[in-house]
Every structure is written in C-alpha cells, then in structure tokens.
Length: 358
Image 1 (tube, rainbow, N blue to C red):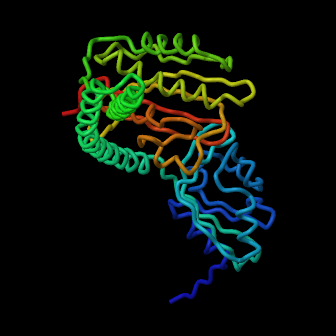
Image 2 (spheres, rainbow, N blue to C red):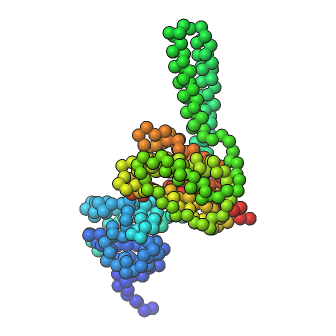
Image 3 (cartoon, rainbow, N blue to C red):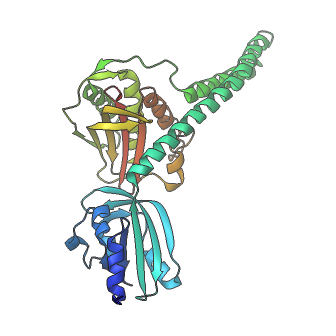
C-alpha cells in the first residue's frame, strides 16, 4: 500500500469544502482569512465579496457586535448564538445560528460555523405562536367568565343600594358602578371581536388604502407613507372590517413608535406567495401585507411575547392591539409575523387566497 501524505492545511480545506455548514476563519482584526464554498451559498455572496473582507462590513446590521468577537479572542472562550438577525449590505435579511470557536492553529483566529435557519425557524415559530395564541385565548375566556359574573352582581347590588342612600352618599355607589363598568369593558377588549369573520369577495388594496387614509388623518408626527403594491393579487373572500381593524392597529403602533425618529416613514407593501404553508396547510396562493417602518425597533425583552395580551413597549400602552390583530388574522386562517432591528421593523400579515392543496 502506498502511503500518501496530505499537508494538514490542504486536508482541512478538503474536509470543509464537503460541509453544508458555512465555515469561516477570522483573524484578530476580524478580517476573513478563509471560507468554504457553503459560505457563499448561506450568505448569498460571491467569493470576491468575501475574500479578505472585514467581517462586520458584510452587514448593515447583525445582532452580534464586534466586541463579542474581540472578547472571545481575549478570553480564549468561544460562544454560540441562535436566531441571530443579520441584514446584509444589499438589504437581504437572514436568520442565522452562529458558533464561534477560538482557534489554536493558527493562533489568535476565530473559527465561525454559520447555519441558515430562516425556513425551519419560521415553521417552528409559526407553530409555537399558534399554540401560545390558542392557550392565551382559552385562559382569557376563563378569566373573563370568572370576573364578569361577580362584577355583574357587584354592579347590581350598588344600584339597589343607591336607591336607599342620600344624595351625598350616592357618589360612592356611582364610583362602584363606574369602576365595575370599566373592568367589564377591559375584559371585553381582552376578548376581542366576538363575531365570526363575514367573508365577502373583496379587493385587498382597497382595504389597505382605507387604512392608509385613516392613518393620514391621525398623523401628528407627519409620518411619510409610501406604497408598494403587487397588482397581481386577485380579489378573494375576506372580512374587510376585521382585516382593516387588524392592519390599522399595526399601522398606528408604527406611527407611535416613530414619535422620536427623524424623517419617520412607513411603507405599506403587498405581495403574493405561491405554494405556501400556513398552520400545516399548503395553499396555492397566499397574500402578504407588510407594514415597514424606520423606527428604533422592538425591545429584545418583549420580542418573544409581542402578541400576548397586556404586553406593550409603549409607556401607558394596553398591549391589546397586536393580540387582537393576531386573533382577527387567525379567523382568516393566517398569521402575523414580525422582524425587527434598530432602524427597521416589519410586520407581515399572511392571508390564504386559494384553497388548500389536495
């Protein structure tokens, strides 16, 4: 048998070229010194764009700062981060899993393993949000029943008591009645719209334009609105009133988030997807409505619970708008997704148009 000796560097390069995981080697200045072919596929960038490039300059935004990489080098301790939001220089958005290892050979280098997880994570997140939403709705219905029954008795007792009191003391029973009514209204708002969707053949863009006109009437921050519609979206059956309420909640949230933003802007966009899966069902056509603003982004501590009732990033906010919006879209068999980073927040409404595949 002939003994064939392969140089170590060539062997490593040969092995990494066989991997579907993107492998990248950074020097102490965070310049790219090596990358395998999978890097080009995962990031959608050519070899010339990656060669000897300063790694942070590949992105408009990435959740991992340069300090994290430099800290790993100084401490000789690697790290791993899941669901890293990255926006490439050309505006494409990626969701990545990144594992960082401090290399011993060559020394003072970082070895990055990068996986593109957008599609898998979207499916997993959609399923998780659906289960969370249904669980939250059942919890709210149970609480509403337990709260409204005694409230009705309390209000009735206060009304009876009021008939026996002097005018000086009636202000106390009136206070009880007013607070009971306030709590009942709050519970009703938590439950959201109670009527089922009444679908009629409608034009999606007419509904979006109605929302835009309403938002322009209440535009204290003088937000600039732009439109980017896909004219190929056909008319289809939906409830214009319920969808208008859901979309208006999102647009008004965006307006409020832009209060302290220089040159505030909101883009209303529509698109159509072919052969797309929603809630485990595959549809021939799915309509998208996107609300994109250039505000500060959603705080990281509420991103995972954004659609829960009573969760709000605004001081004094009720946290009901997005929860109610999600309920309304669920009634149409769709769902609402959100991507956000500083300078960009994007809510996407998915609405099935055509019947499911057989």
